Length: 115
Length: 113
Image 1 (cartoon, rainbow over the protein chains, first blue to last red):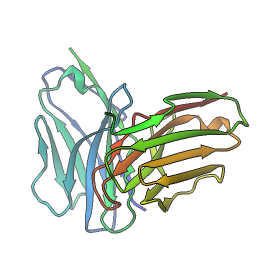
Image 2 (cartoon, one colour):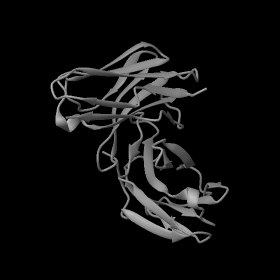
Image 3 (cartoon, helix red, strand yellow):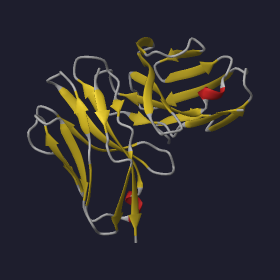
Image 4 (spheres, rainbow over the protein chains, first blue to last red):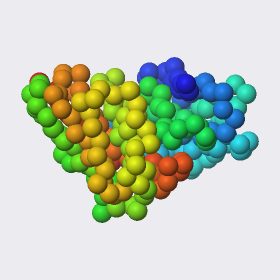
């Protein structure tokens, strides 16, 4: 079974600074997809960024970027120029290409942004 | 217009009761999901339907029964509610079963007293 591990239950960052959230995963698959979802206090799950395992280039979406290390099975999220609205739970998720259709989520990292 | 809508958003009920949560998506997606988020925020897949056909059925008590009358709707019925069923239940949809992007509803918080 695939597992996703987020080792940081909580992180804190000052406004305008940069923070990196860690995620590792365990899989024997070669084709898969990785995601970061954000869950603000409103409870809504919002897709932040996604990465296809076959792509070597790290995905970037505005202030959000990932560091995808396939050999190390690591998929960290970097948030640059942090804003108060970035405060939320962040979930790393994995989906295999060929074995099942569901997303497997990590336990989440709570990000606090201080003024 | 809300893409994936769940009703009710909040539900408080007594142990032993039966309750349903409804989900509708207006995105034209083929696949819908139910996820459970427990008190520690852990999200776990429960069920998935693709064009009204059950494709994922995780280890969930028989008291939970999903129903998909058409591909735009996926309802969750829970019999004989227990304290441990208290959680937030999220409905989601994706264009196809193999699609990578899930669109989530706002969640339904169920509290069992």
